[in-house]
Amino acid sequence: MGKRQPAHDFELGATFRCDVKSPGELVSLARAAEGAGFAYCWLFDSHVSAMDPYPLLGMIADQTSRVRLGTLVTNPVSRHPTVTASALATLNRISGERMELGIGRGDGAVRQFGSRPATVPELEHAIGIIRTLAEGKEVTLGDTKVRLPWVGPSDLRVWVAGYGPRVIDLAARIADGVIFQLADPLILQSLIVQLKVRVSAAGRAPGSVHVMAAAPAFVGSVAEGVERSAWFPKFIRHHIIEVLEQSSSDIPAGYSQYIDEPEGSALRDMVLRTCLVGDVDSHVAKLADLRAIGVDQVNLYLMDGREAEMIEAYRQSVIPAVFHNASSEVSR
Image 1 (tube, helix red, strand yellow):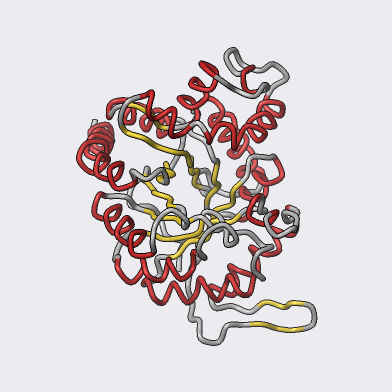
Image 2 (image 1 turned 180 degrees about the vertical axis):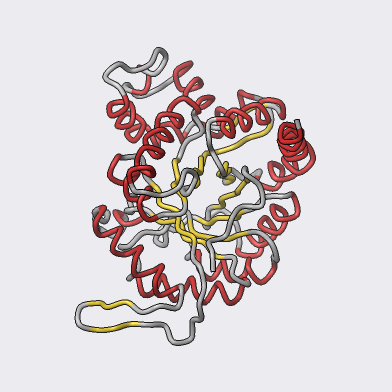
């Protein structure tokens, strides 16, 4: 059984937090996203500060039929890999094989209970266990052979989150997708080049590892969008500095502001670079730019209280324009 391929060469996802809405409201948002044309719905996994995503994913799976579902992202520390594998396999039964795994080393979610993020080798080991068990196969843990006897042959697509060269190398070797938390085409292009080099070095076919750009989105005035999304460039700032230092000894013009804590116009510029903010045309143009550099999925972080409005704006205006334009380009 082959790994699932996307319906298009470019897809949209929506990610929801598990602490700002009731379970029923999250289900309603997922149904609305599916109806609007989103290909994916993801839930954050930060079980101390928010509701556990797995029961919520079960509720969403029961009330949807097409949209793909997953964690964005879980980690190998909060749960033993066998627990994650069993949860995903169970949800695959409920959803009709629509589950995918988004996973990273763990950061804030694990520090909340005094633990440390997994190392890259620990992450790779955990992914191997989760994928093997969720696909109905057997693993050896220590001296014990483990298999989920109720799981039949299946496929689990794995998305690995991170920015550093070791995580990108891991994704290039074993993953189906890589998750980059930003929507800045210039920085993403550098990361995608690194990924392509490593995919080739791993002996895999070009395009074997899909690229996700995940970032907040707001359709409306730039001023309000900047205000609502200002947390994001601050949240990822240390990652971006690391990427810039790795990518080039000379920081591109306009990016020196990442080094200092951004405020005022610098913060506004960073929001516009890293997020999707502005009117419909701005979103359509940004999505086209991301698609052109090789992004396969743009995943919108919807979590500021106006999630339903953003989904509706995409349904009415953004999605028809994006996919009409994409179809027109293909037919030329």
